[in-house]
Image (cartoon, rainbow, N blue to C red):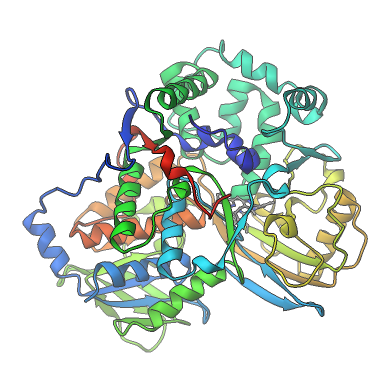
Length: 603
Ligand SMILES: C=Cc1c2[nH]c(c1C)Cc1[nH]c(c(CCC(=O)O)c1C)Cc1[nH]c(c(C)c1CCC(=O)O)Cc1[nH]c(c(C)c1C=C)C2
């Protein structure tokens, strides 16, 4: 069955909606258990032109030294081992928004994460990162958040003046019913789900905001209280601006296909139950392209002697890395630095990216004395608008300029007192847009209880908390609070919401400027136009990967890098935006053997 994934709280509660795009026709069953592997398609004949192109891939540039750029360069060294790779990065430091700072707090160390801190094992992209971690020899650094831990079970939303635990299984039914009918957070939601079945279809639109779509179908309560909180926790974004089609494709298309989101969800669940009963495996509904990728990844892992641990694929889980997520980017950097075919040009600003008609390649100009260099291929991992502003003829790709970003202030705090979260242990809480200003004048988006979320990360006993502020609330702002102001704002949030009055023993405040791309209304169409622009003759040597395109998470970025490089390795031209080629998506059900379920990583 499609597991309801209790462990990931609101995000996972909504996962079937969030993950599953448009269904065309019946689901296809794909079994991938032992002895009945479904192989990825690799049999296409390459055209002479494509073969010639790949043979020419001698010099490749990667623009951007964040996790996507590092992963792209790493995969290139494996797929095209003879190519010469130049990686450009504006900062002296590599790693981008993945940044972990280890701080001595007197009686030990704590790790402050300034960007993402945990990774999910979930399909389809989780296994790509896990495979990379394994290839880099980092399995020993993995810190799993146990599935029976408080962080797995307890996720909260602050509404209107207290923490409300999301009633995720295994909550007893009576508790679930009591919560749903007594907490103002859920007011009207159960009825709106039932009423949705009878709601007529709306007028067809190319896209609309999550707020507009779900309030039309379910009423404003679900949007303002629950979905706005979820948008804060993933995009730090505005539920009334983010695209329903890009972020909730399954729900969005199910109005058209089933007449109702509730009905479509029920059908999905029924279908899964049936599949489990008939096939006896562990089924997951995936896009065909994702299933192909996973099975190919599995084959790769088996070939390279990595033990494919199938529970990675089927059991949702969360993990972190000892020393922080920067352990991953550092390992990638180290691997690249030890490769004589790779040159890393840190502290180098790119001024211009232009097609080179004579060679058919792409010319990259730096903002310094080095002369421009021409590459057979360039993978840009810059945010879409940064790439756009550096392109010689940006007019053909105006859509790239239109992916906005938001700025998030991250305030990490450490307290020597280890009992500060004892009355509300868990992953942390999100703050929906609907809570009154008086309850959130600082415009916090959410608070993470790091001590519970990644137990065992720090050597110092105490309580570690991160407060996230800003995001879409700071749209149009031209300056942001100072570090000192940020610290005071975070302390005041913790005092008001959690009653914490103690002084922190250590803290770290950073403003992550323009760090999270926003897939706003029209994102799909804009990406489709960018795909057309990049597919033309002019820009055929340019591919894109990174958070602006196929998902904002670390897993998504690594998967994007791998996809581009694997396709290049097969001798195909690739833009990185292929998934936008079509509006409809083919769905398959991947079924994993029961025997694939055991393992050590995810308990
Ligand atoms: C720096 C702030 C970030 C916020 N969202 C993201 C970052 C990097 C990106 C992100 N966060 C989550 C996802 C979902 C999918 C996934 O890969 O896990 C994405 C793409 C979920 C999430 N939200 C929070 C955490 C700790 C996680 C797990 C992943 C991670 O460690 O980042 C909490 C949280 N993130 C943001 C806010 C405002 C927030 C509030 C509590 C913004």
